[in-house]
Image 1 (cartoon, rainbow, N blue to C red):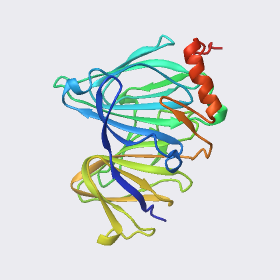
Image 2: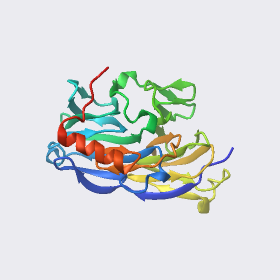
Image 3: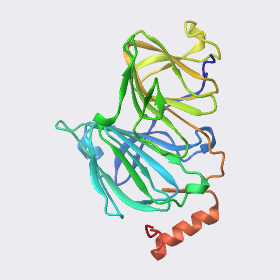
Length: 294
């Protein structure tokens, strides 16, 4: 086995989006090649309703998929196709914007005002940029969880892991999206296909991720300490290795097959060429952005 070394570690950065939602951005709006097929990752977490309740008013998307995973509170949403609903705690919404959609998302806190969720943008290949929009919405009860003998728990949102298949399917980059909890002091190796780009985002507890091409996590010089808000981009290999700290660790582990295509990106629209971008924004102006459903 080959352990994936940590290529880069950073902390998510405080920023503001929508109509004034305070959140932390792990990556986005930079060079997308190192995280291909992903584009942007946000952690929206707050206990103060004024920091998130203004939400994300009506805005367009084309050429991407948006993945919203909610841990506390809920997100109300509606779109130009007439869809309307609520993403509750523990649930995931996987929206394929495809040829174009206009929607809004309004976070709501739980009974004590807590709101916590993540949004990930996945790119679409050129062949699917103009596909028909669609949703996959899965309640928390529909997301399988597997547990190892040492108490490690993994919620499988998308992809296949430890013999369990996640409920989200038909996604172009065949991503794996896992919510991993490792108990205090435990050393865990998690398989990730070698051909994939992979990242982890720590949102609870802390731990040490191996930073060596061979399993050497017992050596201090070959580990990277990661705590809350840490984003880790991994090099090539077929396993991620982590030893949980004294309070355990919980993190997202996400991987996907790189598309290797040119990216033309402005705001909520991601295409392959600047001409395609110009056309998309021209269609927004002239009212032809939304395509008829076949």
